[in-house]
Image (cartoon, rainbow, N blue to C red; front, side, top):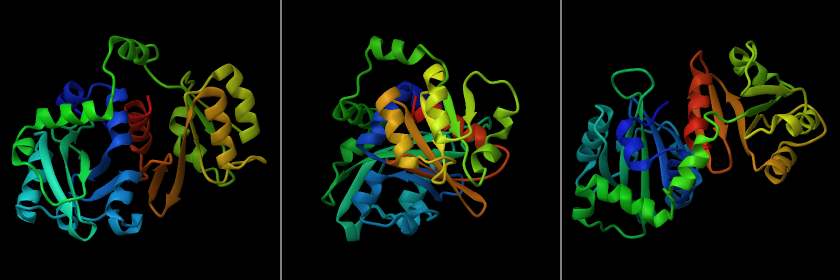
Length: 278
């Protein structure tokens, strides 16, 4: 899952996208215009539960001063590969959102989905001049988030091309099942630990950047204890995965994404880690 050339130009590499998503509202929309993921900022600002938002058609769930048809056209334009500015609202929450829509590409000619990053306003009023300029809006959001684009940040992000991922085995063997494709081959960037305690021991040499586990890890340590230890000792992010029917749910405390569990799932998760966590 790649953010596309224009997204790289405006948002830069991971530090920018990650910073914007933490400061503002992030929504992932699939090729069918349905919401497949969002961060906690969106839940807070819409005052909605996760179940009320996930899988909703974006243009039907939200509204716009210029109407749902206009909002639907904006989404269709982005799904044709054209980044654009967007304004939408949720009347019952008395909140207006304004931001940018970025196409997401895998290996196809047309986008496989969209990333929407927007700032909220507790009033239904938006200056049209701001919405007409995609580049100005994206730049303003970067400045408001206080995200650095200095050469030091860029150099730091280039030290390692890929994050080191430490997987923690669980009692349902979900982690081993999902990531079997990368574990079956020798891989310097990903290893699996048989328990939470073993993961901490292996981390002394492996030095992981990202931990992936379920809410039911093998061992005496709980998932929260594992996450806390790795954050303190290695400044490593922990990503939680769980299964719900034919979907995988990916969480890390601020982001919540649902993806179909099929052959391309692993590559999508790894690309997501590379973009948002590294």
